[in-house]
Length: 82
Length: 425
Figure (tube, helix red, strand yellow):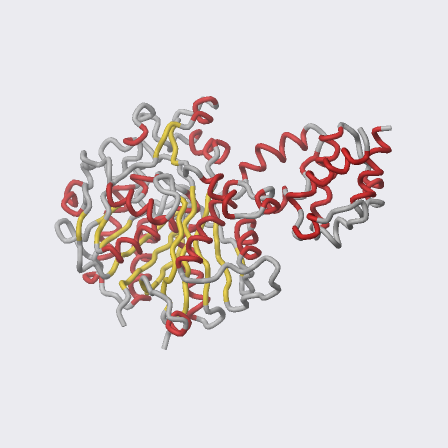
């Protein structure tokens, strides 16, 4: 799966939690999940569960700490997919 | 002088109508919302019928944002939809989510009898037992915490006054209105969103079925299954939904030119102490009588001014005692008792929502000048027979309906009584 495919799925998973829909229109790898998309930080655990289900991977708690931007999530997932 | 408190908005999600107009049409016609519930049959319940509001997910999806919906179980959906309807009905603007403005003068007391047991049973227990607690995600706590429904609406409507959830079994919904009345009277709030919600779930209803207090004899005829006041009453039919009333100080309602539907003129709250025939599951008749009299006295209404009664009347063996308590409290015997009706005959027993859903019915009756039929009691219970002329089997027009009294009783021997008065300047 290439990075643009992964990014498409990441954005789809984030979409219901996004409070700033304008930022979603211009989403890029640099877009911050919390600061730009205004996803409530408490909901990141739901996003991570959805990543695990969608990509059939396991994400450790410490992996999540390094995820700030959409690109960070894409990198983490592509790394797990090998 | 005590501040007067008025009702300016109504919202309801009931088994026979998922909005106020639908509900009003149904209660006028005597339309039952009781249906076969497959989950009850699959779980081998004795009673396999219930009152489940229809079309709720579609309504919620049209009304609320995607992130909210992911964290809203059934009682949240009922409560939020009923609140949204009541809020708009009161002529209030729904705040923008982006706005930082908080309405410090408006609070909420929105109760539930059981809470998020549907979520506990379907998700928390199985996932935790399977060693997968992590998979509960972030939305579990807010759906199972007792105050989940009031917490939910406080965000949707930017409420800044007291926001809480009360719980007093089947008197919860009426108690919430009584508590909101007192907060506004005391000058601590100008507007309170009051009511109750209860989810439709066989997990919630299982214990009642085990107690054999649900009607097992009408599974083939769901619409005839809820039979308060009847000789063939065989227990209650479980129901679900939400009722919400917007209570406001008279001053605020006048200031903003709101339409005033009725006045909450008085309330009574007490407990029978599990004595004199009262127990965990049955009301002490002295407690009931005192509660009704407390509410009348608070409203400064004499018993002969009561034009109609919306009883608790569930279709258990307690109905005859309840009718006796009303007669004793009002000092009005056979032939003198005002019309007495049971909303539960059409929607079943919506537990923590009952007092609120039935209070919405009361306000509609005051506004429309009618008493809705109490269905499925053509065969009036022999002990209630002396009062048979007070039971409306079809809609009873009452243009001069001015005062209606609503009571609700709950496990723990707790009682709540409300006096609603037609609004007159």
